[in-house]
Image (cartoon, rainbow, N blue to C red):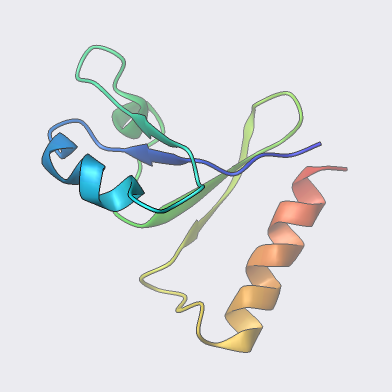
Length: 85
C-alpha cells in the first residue's frame, strides 16, 4: 500500500486554499515547530520517497527532472515502486 501527499513548507500557508481547490492530493502544512522540511533537508519541489516503515529512501526533484519528459516520469515511477519492496 502506498500514498502520495504534499507537504507545504512553513511560512507558505497563504496559497494553500488555491493550491488544493479542485484537487484530490492531500496537502499537509509544515510548521516551524515540527520542521519537516528542515529535518528532511527539503529543496523546493522535492519528492521525498519513504519506504513502508516511513524511512526516507530517496529524493527526486521536479525542477531538475521535468515530468513532461517521459524518461523522468519513468525514473520517478521506478523509485516509487522500488520503495514499496
